[in-house]
Length: 370
Image 1: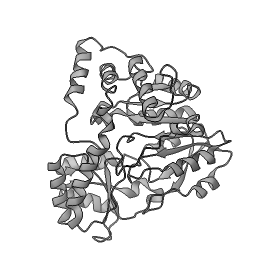
Image 2: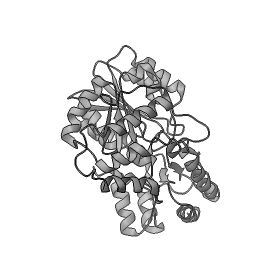
Image 3: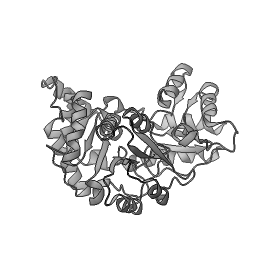
């Protein structure tokens, strides 16, 4: 079906509603980065980039992995620049999954995972996370693994819940996958947006995971420019070889001047290491305003999303309530049931707080009146 993001953003536009649904910032990206892209255009980088991506950018990403995670990725054979995180996920799944393969997906899940598995002929196997804690039941995961299990997809920090997988979670996953041929997609597009002194447990920190994992990352999420659609995939050479077979006939290469600009921009660690503090201030600002509302919430651990439980307000299902909020109250949100197994309705909405303080004030004012 049509993505819930397209549905709710379309409704927000039609109703002229404040849009907290789709995950995009409403403030400007760094003007220095924009100038670097402009300079690359003026310098003539306007034709096709190399299929795997500009080497200088891949090299800078490799250095970033070394500094942050002490992990080695060969920029020539193990890093590919993609048209955003979603294209990277699509390419990894279609490169590895064939007819009747089973892929374990944790729900609520970002809505591109399941359709892509089905498109590849595979069978999604859902593990519903605990509706309140969003913790993974690893015993249930073990019980679902069989000879048809081809892949597992994890996402941390997690969209839509904002939960972060712990070191213990990753160790359990590493043990479960040991002595299997199961591949892993680790969707880490929010890796730098983590709060309250927690750390990001990248799959590349665990040797038993790194050797089987496609790590997916996003420049758009990190640098406040989702419309540029820039991301990358890091994976062992044997997986990258297969990944690029699909990538070359899917997009071939992505926006050349932006790659040139990013190759310079990401060498300054401060352009991404302060992101957690930046967004935590926004989270805290918004939740402080929401204290007087009838919504219940637990502060998000990461991402720029916050869940709001509306069970004190209405018995409506979340999709109907989200539509009514958009039409009557002029504020757009995302209903969580669309991400759950069998559309499990837990009376929860997701809002995006990657917004200016002015926008967050307006949003809280509307929500506190409901």
